[in-house]
Length: 389
Image (cartoon, rainbow, N blue to C red):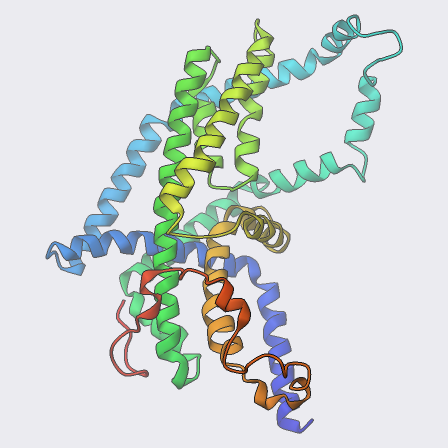
């Protein structure tokens, strides 16, 4: 390799090394971009009514602040009170666990028994225990209130900066690409923006649906702390696969500790029914055209992003997967692999003599639908010119 090639390789490796060490900051920047895109979509709706952007932005921020304030004043206080009672109930149940286990053992055959409490605690708190690892990873995001507050403040400030003049940051990103690809990259960014807006609208609607059905069902069943359980179910719905499974733990525990422990059966059945309705009717109806992500791809993305970014990566796994899929399909598949001609690799020609060069048998059998209707359109204007926000 020549000196210039070595320099280029070292520069690429150094770039990846730096990006790896600042991945937590990059994730916060991505979160700020998602928030800014959501607010910008509302601003554009107001602009369509004829309101100038300089007035639309303060209007959207004022309405958003008012909604958040009303939420904190009306919903958060009763939720905090019920959640505190829920934690107290669980702590009391743990304190009474030995007596409960001893009572249950009287109903078991003589050759069966529950493990002793000391044995269970030693297993759960051992250094190689998976239970301990799960709890450490789950609560590590809350181990520093100051850090979480500073991160939230950073996301808020960046969101407002992105919202104020998005075209400046968009042009800066496009300037890092070769001039011949800037127009195409701008179209891909537009597709990403539309998909993220569709995802946010769909996930909010799904969460409201889960919250409503959970509240109604638990209220009918007479489970205590209904508001806390329903709100937890709605919030955890933002985490695909994992969230719905976690949301049933708290109401099932409260039902089991109630004077009628058999209530746990209809509680679990009701949550299963809610998830079936959400998975097989609401999600295909609301989000089928917005983000067509296969379930296996979503689960793999959750595992990968949770491994790389931690708990916050698990929360943002779906929007990250949406953006990754669009860039892989548009950039890697359409712009590189689909344009790859066999003529430049004569060594493969012998193995592919029976296949015409101008056809793709796989694509003739199955044709993947486009991600977005606007993915084929390109922005107007010169390639190097300013990109509208």
